[in-house]
Amino acid sequence: MKVQDYLSKDEIRQLTTKSDLRGAWMVMANWLLIAGAFALAYRWPNPLTLVIAILILGGRQLGLSILVHECGHRSLFATRRLNEICGNWLAGYAVFLDMDKYAKGHLVHHRTAGTRDDPDLPNYRDYPVDKSSFYRKVWRDLSGQTAMKLIASLSQGGQDQRSHSSEHGKAHDSERNRKPNPVIRNSLIVNGVMLMLLAVFAHPALYLLWVVAYLTVYMLVLRIRQIAEHADVPDLYDLDPRKNTRTTYTNPLTRLLIAPNFVNYHLEHHILASVPAYHLKRLHHLLKQRGAYEDTPLGDGYWQIIRQVTRSEPQTTTG
Image (spheres, rainbow, N blue to C red):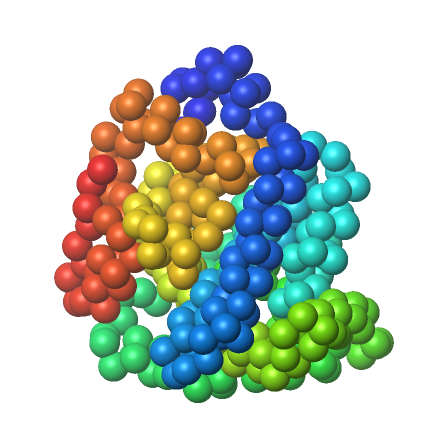
């Protein structure tokens, strides 16, 4: 599709305008939620609040990875240097992500989406799957198996920087970079600062909640996100993003735990990747109002998508 068929030049200019202030707010909002989760567990320590804190932290770890994605596109901030600094030091390194390596792989996904050359295909091409297969994937995520494979890849100098949705892809080819991995060093620095701040203002044991969330909930929400974005779409091998990519509607709970930072508007991101995340909702409404989505299935919530991809006869909702 040609976005110019639905939007004027002035509207495209407005939608692609970046803001340092809005970018800073998105970064701060994610860290405030992280601080709030730690504060909840510290102020009212009991099994329920610990579970809630871990769920929120896992969702915000995804939120930080989405900020890496935005900064990798150089679209979160108007100032290029802010994208570089925040994408790594205020987002990526907290979850062991290197923005530049991530962006390099992710841009290949954008260029090849809708073709068999898409490097992220292994993460969603086999859907729908039977329920037992899906439950096994969920178990691997929540039991820490997925995270341990990722950590092993990084510790061995692997280049699995989660190019968009390669969080659950297999290890890369046997030729790996055996040099010391700077992302591990920088990530340990950032996580060390987090541990120090928790020790000063609360209790150092709270850091264990961050580790548990990373090993479990974060891996699961990454999988759910990638399923919603590209799994069981109308035609995975059609170049029209309306056929190979999906936008999924959210509610406040899923925005908190599964779809932070407007990541659910993934179809719009593929239609016009230069649009900052904070303008994607407006882009969605404009395209929908002007008939761009008349025959386009849209996800009616994440649980609906999960039910769809675990059935032999997938069902879709047309928005």
